[in-house]
Image (tube, rainbow, N blue to C red; front, side, top):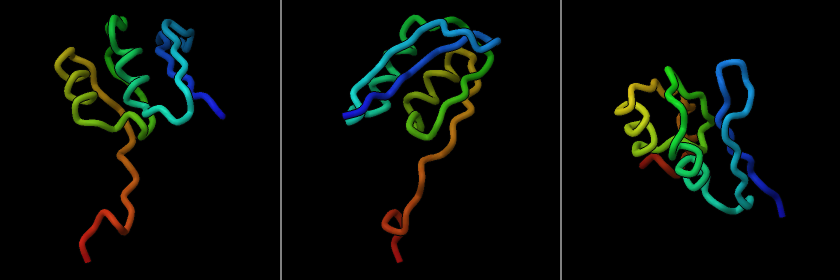
Amino acid sequence: MNTKPHAVTEGNGRPARFFITAGQVSDYTGAAAVTNGRPEADWVLADRGYDADWFREGLIEKGTRPCIAGAKITQDDHQI
């Protein structure tokens, strides 16, 4: 068993919101939890677990620039 921490920090790195999910739970659950009621931000930095169109579009609609690594693409994702 493991856990995943999800955090929103201020510009200087101090935690503003913190949420923990079980390891097998999708990162989208954590993204939704920390996004609700989050403080205004110029940009959001996140790893590829948060790479979802709905998450990016929600940030952009609120005037926040997403900086999120794209999802890993495997050979199975391409038709050969």
